[in-house]
Image (tube, rainbow, N blue to C red):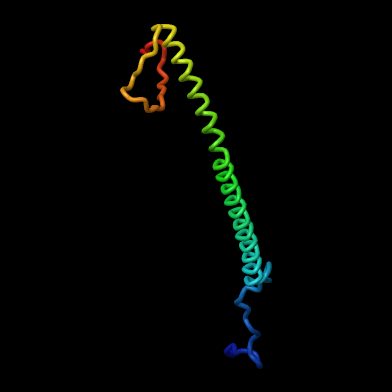
Length: 119
């Protein structure tokens, strides 16, 4: 019995690698797309930060300009309450009384208390 020998010229190549086609783009393309999206996001974030700062500045200046008008309104309300208190005091007591031993004006403070006792 003759021994089996390889054919002349040898055996054919054995395919041991998987032959899968590459799907999608190259990684550099994905990296470029991701960089473009992130750049756009940072741009929009910067724009919104500028807008937010501008609105805050506008709000601050609006408050600065409105403060004198609001203070004047509060002062007029204080004077109205003060004169009404004086008139009510004069009606009840028949005379004006001084609480302080000075002629210096002291801004009154009002504390709101409930009429009924809370239990």
